[in-house]
Length: 424
Image (cartoon, rainbow, N blue to C red; front, side, top):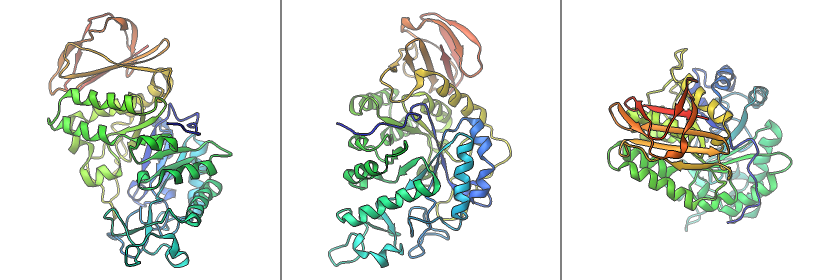
């Protein structure tokens, strides 16, 4: 597989934070969200991904406010969130603090009363009777026709609008695999200059790395859920990761997460899905060869499913109990070259331990830089030693800075559902 595109130079040590603006504050606005920027920057967040900011169709609207993903105008903002100037101001402030900003782009379909349905009905796919249609079971949207070259150009022009008008840094592309790959290649070829943009695809199609920097890890998500429900063993997790390594290009970026807007609203919070294993899986998501993706409120932590089509604000308490947890992990990822994602200089090794059915352990190495991770996936404390003899030396506990000499076969104590991260 070949690609003409190179990932943005800043992406390999980055991370992504998904912003559900409607539910983020009591006001649910761009202006209200601005107050959270310093806290998120202190936590170590690099890329802010905003769920769609475009207006939502009224026709066939779900709930009281509708789905973010039923757009009525690609070049306007949802008045629920504020004005275009409000969004421009938010992006500007985010840039001043060092964030990158990407927006959710819904190319496969629009809402039923998108202005194109009146001005350019030829842009849409039709059923055998000539009616607007949708092929995936979402009755509040209708599909675009990617056989229409004028529609493609108009869609790319709309993407350019957000780059030019609001100075965004890229796109998270919704259900990217439902859109022909050649469209994404066309879009990126048109939009790549004069600046580096970051492209995240909501899909797990290997071929889509021809156009995208990063893709999702749905298979990993489903396998970890099966493991936590005792429907699969620890070996199944390794099998999934080996399949990824063999199938995807070595420089492909993969997004790992324990929650996002779809999972939280429709399938349950990370605590419903993973229970006490949620912390270990969050450590994995931040330190494995991929990009960590954190969802709105996970730093609280948020224990409730957020409504999708109605207002249901996150209940911020003034104290984010997991702020320090994520800050430590993201700072480690930023400072240690062994944790770069999609870097062919980095080697990632599974480690054999004395507790192979309970402890998931791996090492990441880049030259003299090394990070060792042990995750206790058992419900009780245990003692475990690493059997691989080559990883001896002086390490620091990455979360508290305490130094320790690590010798082959050394046994460490792990709390129930606990973890140990060693850095050199």
